[in-house]
Image (cartoon, rainbow, N blue to C red; front, side, top):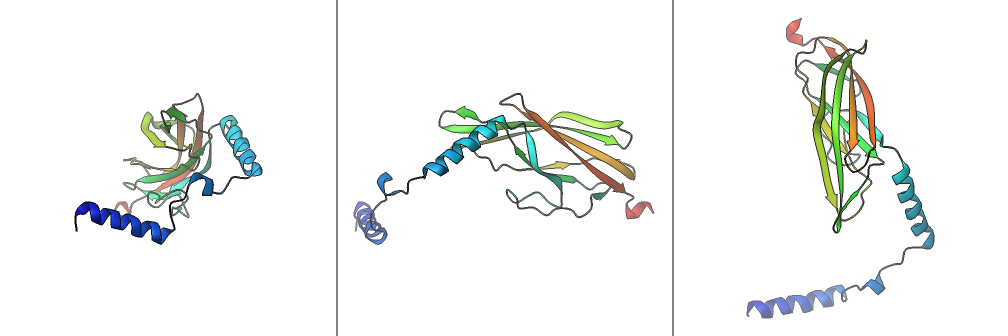
Length: 184
């Protein structure tokens, strides 16, 4: 049997098995209440300042949105990476033809408990995502390798900057550095 004959036979079999191809008329119609709720949600999203539904230290980078292992206690030893999970909301979408882009840059600041800035970096990382839809469930895992910190209490401030608008939002995470077992 030729390749085109096999393809035609497969097509006929698939059509018979699936009962034909669904058309736009066969798709369920969204209710007026659902459509109104979607519109209201989109308006609220645009008015929302850049904020976070979650921001915490985690054991390992997240597998996906909402799929992470939080740390019970934010205690680290010298050399341990600090992994932060964040779910920003209220960011803007940039239209790119038939797609929408999310563009966020991230800055950080490391402070001691008296507020003294020990390290900082603007543009620590840039986050970019494209989709055919204006996605709202967005997450990122950030890894900070802060070397040479003495045992003590610290605060990590992380700021997200929306590159598609003038929105920015930040959060602060206190943590402790413990002496490594080799230093005892």
